[in-house]
Length: 166
Image (cartoon, rainbow, N blue to C red; front, side, top):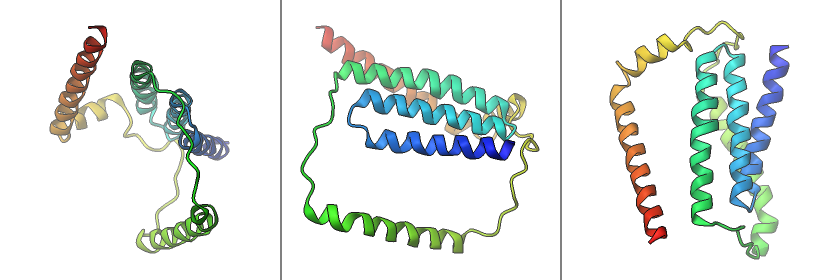
């Protein structure tokens, strides 16, 4: 049952990611990104990482996506304008894409060693204690750098919003 759910939510994540790329309206793309984030949270849950799944939902599915939608609405972004494709892109693009994907898959299969299979529910590294320990010991510098970058982004959004009001 776990394998079936994993496959279903992996397909949902890929479908939402493709929809994210193919959408012409930014709000529709943001909603597709929410679908990707929720599917990833379910995949984490199936792998036994409950804390990471809930953090994925709260931080990315909630806070970051609200910020994205706020920025899209602040910028008043409309639908993307379609441009006429060249005849070369229309006819040579799909076969070249398939060829590129085949070469990339071949190279990845040759370079990556044989991995063991995933056993659902056996991973115990997703607890809050383990993540906190890793976050504040081994990954303290990247954590602090990201927090400073987020603070700078928030200050930039406030400055842009105050210029709109004036």
